[in-house]
Length: 123
Image (cartoon, rainbow, N blue to C red; front, side, top):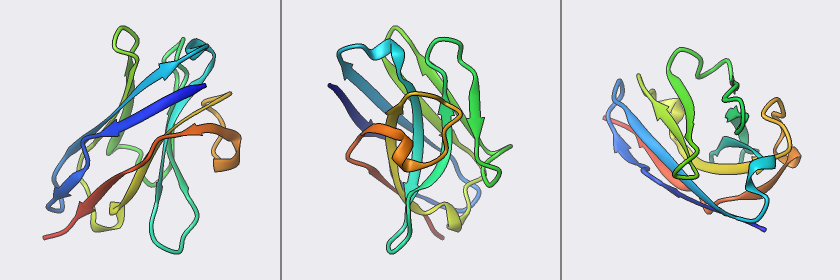
């Protein structure tokens, strides 16, 4: 079993930055890639970013390339999502997730999920 706990959400003005954190715990951690999805009311979860825990290789959705960065700290068992140049359309609940491959972009390809953290971009 893997437990994921997100933090760092909040409200920010357009053009601002936020950094989300996700601490993971549990058994067999090293085999899982880590990712971030987001969801708005009435919509399916949308892939944002993912990282290979071992190599650090990353995958990003086209909508966030150049603005968001995913990284991990192995010693802290924590994955981060640095979000810059935020736009109102980035407003969503952001979920941390663990799955088999960082190349996967569908929600059903990820096995474990955190509780989510709200990000609101508004002036």
